[in-house]
Image (tube, rainbow, N blue to C red; front, side, top):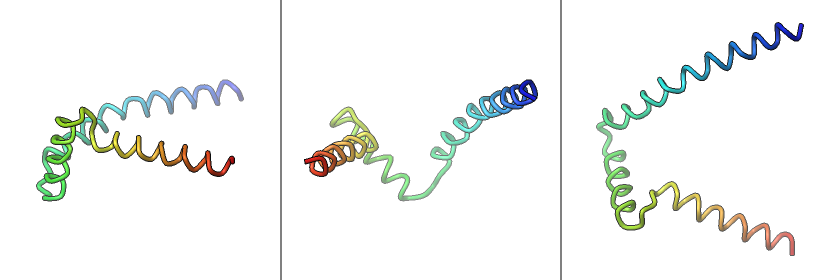
Length: 78
């Protein structure tokens, strides 16, 4: 029974690890193919943000969110 579970686990890991490269390839190409104006504006703003601050928009949002969560936990713990 344990051998069957291990074989199933390894099979799932092998199958899912093979899909990640394809998924990454497809996600990158979707941005290049997209003709949506919102995507173009976001990518342009992201490039300008990276040139000005050396961080992209997602990292700025992550840092601000992390700072707010730390502040809220400090308030709740006091």
